[in-house]
Image (cartoon, rainbow, N blue to C red; front, top):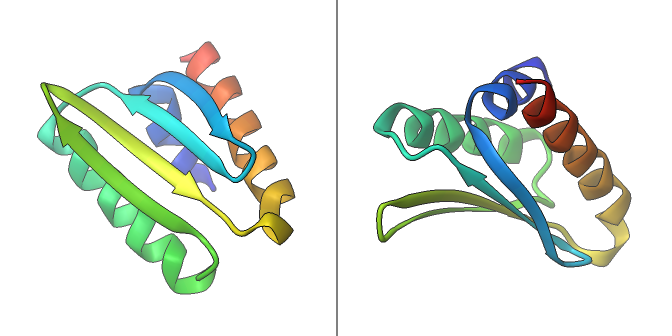
Length: 90
């Protein structure tokens, strides 16, 4: 979680919740942030396979979408809270 918090603090520009089971994190667009987000997503998926991570690079923007099944919404709620708190303090 500390590595996600560090990414959130350094790179998250905005946090949106387009659906109950999906979180959209707009990141500062850079190759380093893309690589960092991808590495964290792969490692997290190794221990918590219910997550679906999608890294989006388009039109000069970078975003990380996180989706979970309905039974894991509480985990997504907690991730959203951490992303919002870290980006607000960073």
